[in-house]
Image (cartoon, rainbow, N blue to C red; front, side):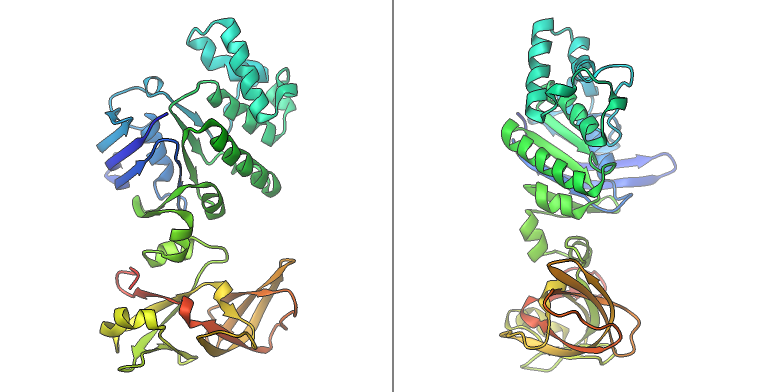
Length: 367
Protein backbone atom coordinates (compact mmCIF):
# COMPACT_ATOMS: atom_id res chain seq x y z
CA UNK A 1 0.00 0.00 0.00
CA UNK A 2 1.05 3.65 0.04
CA UNK A 3 1.04 7.02 1.73
CA UNK A 4 -0.05 10.16 -0.12
CA UNK A 5 1.29 13.64 0.56
CA UNK A 6 0.09 16.93 -0.89
CA UNK A 7 2.43 19.91 -0.56
CA UNK A 8 1.12 23.42 -1.25
CA UNK A 9 -1.20 22.01 -3.92
CA UNK A 10 -2.76 24.67 -6.15
CA UNK A 11 -5.00 24.66 -9.20
CA UNK A 12 -5.75 27.73 -11.30
CA UNK A 13 -7.74 27.62 -14.53
CA UNK A 14 -7.49 29.95 -17.53
CA UNK A 15 -8.71 33.40 -16.67
CA UNK A 16 -7.18 33.23 -13.21
CA UNK A 17 -9.95 31.19 -11.59
CA UNK A 18 -8.31 29.59 -8.54
CA UNK A 19 -10.09 26.51 -7.16
CA UNK A 20 -7.43 24.93 -4.92
CA UNK A 21 -5.28 27.29 -2.87
CA UNK A 22 -2.26 25.65 -1.26
CA UNK A 23 -3.58 22.43 0.30
CA UNK A 24 -1.17 20.53 2.57
CA UNK A 25 -2.32 17.06 3.62
CA UNK A 26 -0.51 13.88 4.63
CA UNK A 27 -2.44 10.60 4.23
CA UNK A 28 -0.77 7.70 5.99
CA UNK A 29 -0.54 4.16 4.65
CA UNK A 30 -3.87 2.26 5.07
CA UNK A 31 -5.66 5.43 6.23
CA UNK A 32 -9.22 6.33 5.16
CA UNK A 33 -9.30 10.09 4.58
CA UNK A 34 -12.40 12.05 3.57
CA UNK A 35 -12.36 15.39 1.75
CA UNK A 36 -15.61 17.15 2.60
CA UNK A 37 -17.08 20.54 1.86
CA UNK A 38 -19.81 22.37 -0.08
CA UNK A 39 -20.04 22.34 -3.87
CA UNK A 40 -17.22 24.31 -5.49
CA UNK A 41 -14.82 24.04 -2.53
CA UNK A 42 -12.14 22.25 -4.59
CA UNK A 43 -12.39 18.74 -3.11
CA UNK A 44 -13.04 16.88 -6.40
CA UNK A 45 -10.36 18.92 -8.19
CA UNK A 46 -7.90 17.94 -5.46
CA UNK A 47 -8.81 14.27 -5.95
CA UNK A 48 -8.42 14.55 -9.71
CA UNK A 49 -4.95 16.08 -9.28
CA UNK A 50 -3.97 13.11 -7.12
CA UNK A 51 -5.28 10.81 -9.87
CA UNK A 52 -3.49 12.73 -12.62
CA UNK A 53 -6.73 13.71 -14.37
CA UNK A 54 -6.01 17.40 -13.70
CA UNK A 55 -2.65 19.13 -14.14
CA UNK A 56 -1.14 20.64 -10.99
CA UNK A 57 -0.62 24.41 -11.30
CA UNK A 58 1.72 24.57 -8.31
CA UNK A 59 2.85 22.26 -5.54
CA UNK A 60 3.61 18.55 -5.38
CA UNK A 61 1.72 15.25 -5.17
CA UNK A 62 3.72 12.42 -3.59
CA UNK A 63 2.70 8.75 -3.58
CA UNK A 64 5.01 6.63 -1.42
CA UNK A 65 7.34 9.65 -1.12
CA UNK A 66 7.73 9.77 -4.91
CA UNK A 67 6.64 12.93 -6.74
CA UNK A 68 4.07 11.94 -9.39
CA UNK A 69 3.19 15.33 -10.92
CA UNK A 70 4.61 14.30 -14.29
CA UNK A 71 3.37 10.69 -14.24
CA UNK A 72 0.28 9.84 -16.34
CA UNK A 73 -2.68 8.33 -14.43
CA UNK A 74 -1.95 4.77 -15.63
CA UNK A 75 1.50 4.86 -14.01
CA UNK A 76 0.41 6.13 -10.58
CA UNK A 77 -0.93 2.76 -9.39
CA UNK A 78 -4.26 4.22 -8.28
CA UNK A 79 -7.86 3.18 -8.96
CA UNK A 80 -10.77 5.61 -9.05
CA UNK A 81 -14.49 5.06 -8.48
CA UNK A 82 -16.66 7.76 -10.05
CA UNK A 83 -20.07 9.17 -9.19
CA UNK A 84 -21.63 8.00 -12.48
CA UNK A 85 -20.32 4.37 -12.31
CA UNK A 86 -18.81 4.62 -15.86
CA UNK A 87 -19.75 1.03 -16.80
CA UNK A 88 -19.75 -0.08 -20.43
CA UNK A 89 -23.42 -0.84 -21.25
CA UNK A 90 -22.66 -3.53 -23.87
CA UNK A 91 -20.46 -5.55 -21.50
CA UNK A 92 -21.46 -7.89 -18.69
CA UNK A 93 -20.47 -7.16 -15.09
CA UNK A 94 -17.66 -9.72 -15.42
CA UNK A 95 -16.35 -8.02 -18.56
CA UNK A 96 -16.58 -4.57 -16.99
CA UNK A 97 -14.63 -5.64 -13.91
CA UNK A 98 -12.06 -7.50 -16.02
CA UNK A 99 -11.63 -4.75 -18.63
CA UNK A 100 -8.63 -3.00 -17.06
CA UNK A 101 -6.81 -6.28 -16.45
CA UNK A 102 -7.26 -7.33 -20.08
CA UNK A 103 -5.84 -4.02 -21.27
CA UNK A 104 -2.76 -4.68 -19.17
CA UNK A 105 -2.34 -8.16 -20.64
CA UNK A 106 -3.06 -10.25 -17.54
CA UNK A 107 -3.40 -13.99 -18.23
CA UNK A 108 -6.93 -15.35 -18.48
CA UNK A 109 -6.75 -17.52 -15.35
CA UNK A 110 -5.47 -14.58 -13.25
CA UNK A 111 -8.30 -12.37 -14.54
CA UNK A 112 -10.86 -15.06 -13.66
CA UNK A 113 -9.38 -15.43 -10.16
CA UNK A 114 -9.31 -11.70 -9.41
CA UNK A 115 -12.82 -11.01 -10.75
CA UNK A 116 -14.32 -13.91 -8.76
CA UNK A 117 -12.50 -12.76 -5.64
CA UNK A 118 -13.72 -9.17 -5.99
CA UNK A 119 -17.28 -10.34 -6.71
CA UNK A 120 -17.19 -12.47 -3.56
CA UNK A 121 -16.01 -9.54 -1.43
CA UNK A 122 -18.81 -7.34 -2.82
CA UNK A 123 -21.53 -10.01 -2.83
CA UNK A 124 -22.24 -9.79 -6.56
CA UNK A 125 -21.23 -13.30 -7.72
CA UNK A 126 -24.68 -13.97 -9.13
CA UNK A 127 -24.63 -10.73 -11.15
CA UNK A 128 -21.49 -11.36 -13.21
CA UNK A 129 -23.41 -12.42 -16.33
CA UNK A 130 -25.78 -9.43 -16.29
CA UNK A 131 -25.38 -6.18 -18.15
CA UNK A 132 -25.53 -2.80 -16.35
CA UNK A 133 -29.09 -2.02 -17.50
CA UNK A 134 -30.30 -5.06 -15.54
CA UNK A 135 -28.75 -3.82 -12.29
CA UNK A 136 -29.98 -1.50 -9.55
CA UNK A 137 -28.01 1.62 -8.64
CA UNK A 138 -26.35 -0.10 -5.70
CA UNK A 139 -25.40 -3.12 -7.81
CA UNK A 140 -23.87 -0.88 -10.47
CA UNK A 141 -21.81 0.90 -7.83
CA UNK A 142 -20.58 -2.44 -6.49
CA UNK A 143 -19.53 -3.40 -10.02
CA UNK A 144 -17.63 -0.12 -10.36
CA UNK A 145 -15.90 -0.74 -7.03
CA UNK A 146 -15.11 -4.31 -8.16
CA UNK A 147 -13.34 -2.93 -11.24
CA UNK A 148 -11.12 -0.90 -8.88
CA UNK A 149 -10.48 -3.79 -6.46
CA UNK A 150 -9.14 -6.20 -9.10
CA UNK A 151 -6.39 -3.72 -9.94
CA UNK A 152 -5.00 -4.12 -6.39
CA UNK A 153 -3.76 -0.52 -6.51
CA UNK A 154 -1.73 1.37 -3.92
CA UNK A 155 -4.48 3.97 -3.46
CA UNK A 156 -8.27 3.95 -3.96
CA UNK A 157 -9.94 7.24 -4.89
CA UNK A 158 -13.72 7.70 -4.50
CA UNK A 159 -15.42 10.76 -6.04
CA UNK A 160 -18.88 11.09 -4.43
CA UNK A 161 -19.72 7.45 -5.29
CA UNK A 162 -23.00 7.35 -3.33
CA UNK A 163 -24.66 10.60 -4.38
CA UNK A 164 -26.86 8.91 -7.04
CA UNK A 165 -28.32 6.40 -4.56
CA UNK A 166 -31.43 6.73 -2.42
CA UNK A 167 -31.06 7.47 1.30
CA UNK A 168 -31.43 3.89 2.58
CA UNK A 169 -29.02 2.49 0.00
CA UNK A 170 -26.48 5.23 0.78
CA UNK A 171 -26.40 4.13 4.41
CA UNK A 172 -25.93 0.49 3.36
CA UNK A 173 -23.21 1.28 0.83
CA UNK A 174 -21.18 3.52 3.14
CA UNK A 175 -21.15 0.67 5.67
CA UNK A 176 -19.98 -1.72 2.95
CA UNK A 177 -17.20 0.65 1.83
CA UNK A 178 -16.02 1.01 5.44
CA UNK A 179 -16.01 -2.77 5.80
CA UNK A 180 -14.15 -3.05 2.49
CA UNK A 181 -11.45 -0.70 3.80
CA UNK A 182 -11.00 -2.84 6.91
CA UNK A 183 -10.78 -6.00 4.80
CA UNK A 184 -8.40 -4.71 2.12
CA UNK A 185 -6.29 -2.60 4.53
CA UNK A 186 -5.52 -0.12 1.78
CA UNK A 187 -5.19 3.66 1.52
CA UNK A 188 -8.48 5.30 0.55
CA UNK A 189 -9.30 8.93 -0.25
CA UNK A 190 -13.02 9.70 -0.41
CA UNK A 191 -14.72 12.90 -1.60
CA UNK A 192 -18.22 13.85 -0.47
CA UNK A 193 -20.36 16.90 0.31
CA UNK A 194 -22.27 14.89 2.93
CA UNK A 195 -20.86 15.54 6.40
CA UNK A 196 -22.65 12.45 7.76
CA UNK A 197 -20.69 10.25 5.34
CA UNK A 198 -17.49 12.03 6.35
CA UNK A 199 -18.11 11.59 10.10
CA UNK A 200 -19.09 7.92 9.88
CA UNK A 201 -16.46 6.72 7.39
CA UNK A 202 -13.25 8.69 7.78
CA UNK A 203 -10.24 8.00 10.01
CA UNK A 204 -9.36 11.60 9.26
CA UNK A 205 -11.38 14.41 7.67
CA UNK A 206 -10.22 17.37 5.60
CA UNK A 207 -12.85 20.13 5.69
CA UNK A 208 -12.53 22.39 2.63
CA UNK A 209 -13.95 25.78 1.70
CA UNK A 210 -13.02 28.06 -1.22
CA UNK A 211 -10.05 25.86 -2.10
CA UNK A 212 -8.51 25.97 1.39
CA UNK A 213 -8.28 23.17 3.94
CA UNK A 214 -10.07 24.72 6.91
CA UNK A 215 -9.25 21.94 9.37
CA UNK A 216 -7.75 18.44 9.27
CA UNK A 217 -8.61 16.18 12.19
CA UNK A 218 -10.31 13.00 13.37
CA UNK A 219 -14.14 13.10 13.23
CA UNK A 220 -14.84 13.62 16.95
CA UNK A 221 -12.05 16.16 17.27
CA UNK A 222 -13.65 18.18 14.44
CA UNK A 223 -17.02 17.95 16.13
CA UNK A 224 -15.87 18.89 19.62
CA UNK A 225 -13.05 21.31 18.77
CA UNK A 226 -13.79 23.16 15.52
CA UNK A 227 -11.16 25.74 14.56
CA UNK A 228 -13.58 28.26 13.06
CA UNK A 229 -17.22 29.09 12.54
CA UNK A 230 -17.39 27.40 9.13
CA UNK A 231 -16.20 24.03 10.44
CA UNK A 232 -18.46 24.33 13.49
CA UNK A 233 -21.50 25.00 11.30
CA UNK A 234 -20.69 22.47 8.59
CA UNK A 235 -19.96 19.47 10.82
CA UNK A 236 -23.00 18.25 12.75
CA UNK A 237 -26.65 17.76 11.86
CA UNK A 238 -28.72 19.78 12.61
CA UNK A 239 -26.13 22.53 12.34
CA UNK A 240 -24.72 24.47 15.28
CA UNK A 241 -26.67 27.56 16.39
CA UNK A 242 -24.86 30.90 16.32
CA UNK A 243 -25.72 33.90 18.51
CA UNK A 244 -24.14 37.34 18.11
CA UNK A 245 -23.48 39.38 21.22
CA UNK A 246 -20.89 40.97 23.51
CA UNK A 247 -18.83 39.96 26.54
CA UNK A 248 -19.53 41.98 29.71
CA UNK A 249 -18.31 41.98 33.30
CA UNK A 250 -14.97 41.99 35.07
CA UNK A 251 -14.46 38.90 37.23
CA UNK A 252 -17.65 37.03 36.35
CA UNK A 253 -17.90 37.36 32.58
CA UNK A 254 -21.25 37.03 30.84
CA UNK A 255 -22.31 36.76 27.20
CA UNK A 256 -25.08 39.22 26.29
CA UNK A 257 -27.06 38.43 23.15
CA UNK A 258 -27.15 41.53 20.92
CA UNK A 259 -30.97 41.79 20.83
CA UNK A 260 -31.16 41.53 24.61
CA UNK A 261 -33.08 38.25 24.46
CA UNK A 262 -30.83 36.58 27.03
CA UNK A 263 -27.52 36.65 28.81
CA UNK A 264 -25.53 33.73 30.17
CA UNK A 265 -22.40 33.23 32.25
CA UNK A 266 -19.17 32.44 30.43
CA UNK A 267 -17.98 28.94 31.39
CA UNK A 268 -14.92 28.81 33.66
CA UNK A 269 -12.72 27.28 30.97
CA UNK A 270 -13.58 30.18 28.63
CA UNK A 271 -12.93 33.09 30.99
CA UNK A 272 -9.19 33.28 30.39
CA UNK A 273 -9.64 33.26 26.60
CA UNK A 274 -12.45 35.82 26.63
CA UNK A 275 -10.96 38.25 29.14
CA UNK A 276 -9.52 40.40 26.34
CA UNK A 277 -12.93 40.49 24.60
CA UNK A 278 -14.79 42.43 27.33
CA UNK A 279 -17.05 45.02 25.66
CA UNK A 280 -16.30 43.49 22.28
CA UNK A 281 -18.57 41.62 19.88
CA UNK A 282 -18.24 37.83 19.66
CA UNK A 283 -20.22 34.94 18.20
CA UNK A 284 -21.36 32.16 20.49
CA UNK A 285 -22.04 28.69 19.06
CA UNK A 286 -24.21 26.05 20.72
CA UNK A 287 -25.18 22.69 19.23
CA UNK A 288 -28.89 21.69 19.19
CA UNK A 289 -28.29 18.79 21.61
CA UNK A 290 -26.94 21.26 24.18
CA UNK A 291 -30.27 23.09 24.37
CA UNK A 292 -32.60 21.37 26.83
CA UNK A 293 -36.17 21.34 28.03
CA UNK A 294 -37.16 23.04 31.31
CA UNK A 295 -36.41 20.90 34.36
CA UNK A 296 -33.13 19.54 33.01
CA UNK A 297 -30.45 19.35 35.66
CA UNK A 298 -27.45 21.18 34.32
CA UNK A 299 -24.36 22.08 36.35
CA UNK A 300 -24.21 25.35 34.38
CA UNK A 301 -27.17 26.61 32.47
CA UNK A 302 -28.99 29.71 31.27
CA UNK A 303 -32.77 29.89 31.10
CA UNK A 304 -33.94 31.47 27.84
CA UNK A 305 -37.47 32.39 26.76
CA UNK A 306 -38.18 31.04 23.27
CA UNK A 307 -41.15 30.84 20.90
CA UNK A 308 -41.70 27.54 19.09
CA UNK A 309 -41.89 28.03 15.30
CA UNK A 310 -41.67 24.54 13.76
CA UNK A 311 -41.65 21.01 15.18
CA UNK A 312 -40.20 18.01 13.33
CA UNK A 313 -40.84 14.61 14.96
CA UNK A 314 -37.98 12.25 14.04
CA UNK A 315 -39.19 9.20 15.98
CA UNK A 316 -36.81 8.94 18.91
CA UNK A 317 -36.29 12.70 19.10
CA UNK A 318 -37.89 15.99 18.08
CA UNK A 319 -36.21 18.82 16.20
CA UNK A 320 -37.66 22.04 17.58
CA UNK A 321 -37.11 25.31 15.73
CA UNK A 322 -37.58 28.43 17.83
CA UNK A 323 -37.03 32.19 17.80
CA UNK A 324 -35.93 34.59 20.54
CA UNK A 325 -37.79 37.81 21.34
CA UNK A 326 -38.71 39.70 18.17
CA UNK A 327 -35.98 38.09 16.06
CA UNK A 328 -37.05 36.35 12.84
CA UNK A 329 -33.98 34.13 12.87
CA UNK A 330 -34.64 30.51 13.83
CA UNK A 331 -32.54 28.29 16.06
CA UNK A 332 -32.69 24.53 16.55
CA UNK A 333 -32.92 22.25 19.59
CA UNK A 334 -32.95 18.44 19.76
CA UNK A 335 -35.36 17.16 22.40
CA UNK A 336 -36.35 13.64 23.35
CA UNK A 337 -39.77 12.54 22.10
CA UNK A 338 -41.44 12.48 25.52
CA UNK A 339 -43.49 15.68 25.04
CA UNK A 340 -44.31 17.44 21.79
CA UNK A 341 -43.72 21.24 21.92
CA UNK A 342 -46.66 23.34 20.75
CA UNK A 343 -46.10 25.61 17.73
CA UNK A 344 -46.62 29.28 18.54
CA UNK A 345 -46.31 28.80 22.29
CA UNK A 346 -43.58 30.11 24.58
CA UNK A 347 -41.07 27.54 25.76
CA UNK A 348 -38.37 28.25 28.32
CA UNK A 349 -35.26 26.38 27.20
CA UNK A 350 -31.97 25.82 29.00
CA UNK A 351 -28.63 26.52 27.32
CA UNK A 352 -25.79 24.31 28.55
CA UNK A 353 -23.18 27.04 28.96
CA UNK A 354 -20.35 24.55 29.54
CA UNK A 355 -20.71 23.40 25.90
CA UNK A 356 -20.58 26.88 24.30
CA UNK A 357 -18.02 27.80 21.63
CA UNK A 358 -16.93 31.41 21.02
CA UNK A 359 -15.70 32.88 17.74
CA UNK A 360 -14.05 36.13 16.68
CA UNK A 361 -16.56 38.18 14.65
CA UNK A 362 -13.92 39.41 12.17
CA UNK A 363 -11.82 36.29 11.51
CA UNK A 364 -14.51 33.77 12.60
CA UNK A 365 -11.69 31.76 14.20
CA UNK A 366 -12.42 30.05 17.51
CA UNK A 367 -11.39 32.08 20.56
